[in-house]
Amino acid sequence: MLDKSCLYISDYIERNKDIYYDMLTRVRTHNDMISWIEFFLEAVIETSKTAKEKFRKVVELTMEMDKMIIDLPVKSENAKKVLDLLYDEPIISRKKILEKIDIKPTTLNVTINSLQERQVIQETTGYSRNQVFAFQKYIDLFLK
Image: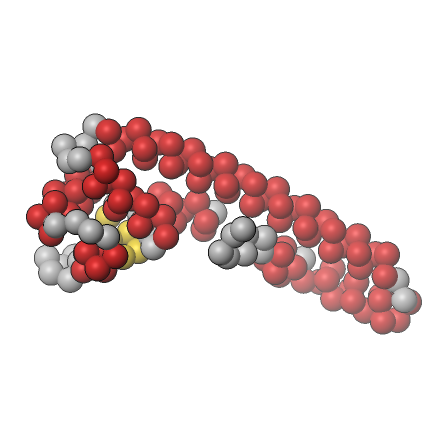
């Protein structure tokens, strides 16, 4: 049902690299599959807990954003279109937003300005043209 993986067991293995290699060695030298399976199951359990917490935070953020767009000085449906795109592409250019959603450039400009004022998005290039925006609150959920 998901387009992308949500369990990053490799992160757990990387953080427990020594144990991982020890378990692999024990399988080879002592035929100790049980310890390997236990290690791997622990990786799945911890990774699942982490993923569940991230999903909870994403749901909270989407609810917060849905409430916030009601108070913007733009049509909520236009802000919602932009936000929905930002969930798919949290770093995106103004040009790409216009290509991906049906919105007039002037409407997009007002929407972007409103989202910047609310600190939902930040312009990342420092340029007045060819701007790129980041939905940093959303990005941060996955970097922590």
